[in-house]
Image 1: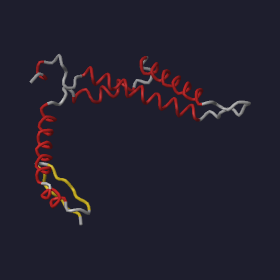
Image 2: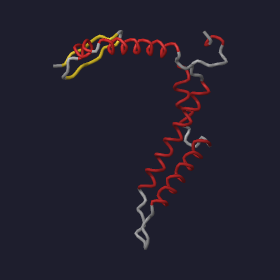
Image 3: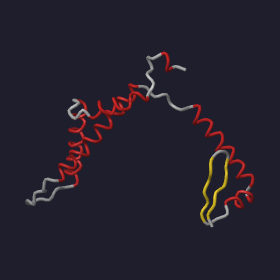
Length: 137
């Protein structure tokens, strides 16, 4: 039997067990859990990191590098492996992946794809700027 149980402002779902009865059985544990949950929720609300536009740009660059790495990796998989005298070793595969990662990093640093700038422009309106006195409230 499934149902819900209120814990503070959050709703916990139960599946197949009577969660309320389990909490009542261990009421000390249940109340401690509830207290810890409430204090954690208050901390999360009060200690949310303040994002700024510089951090957004850095995150956009990292996302562009990750995308470029996946792109290069996918392109590399389209090239058939040679069936020469020696099969590719694990070391060569690791080296190839590291080379692809460096190539992707270079693509992101030189802004060749332009993806980071597009992401930044799309999201910049939602982030406070540290230089803006209005955002320091």
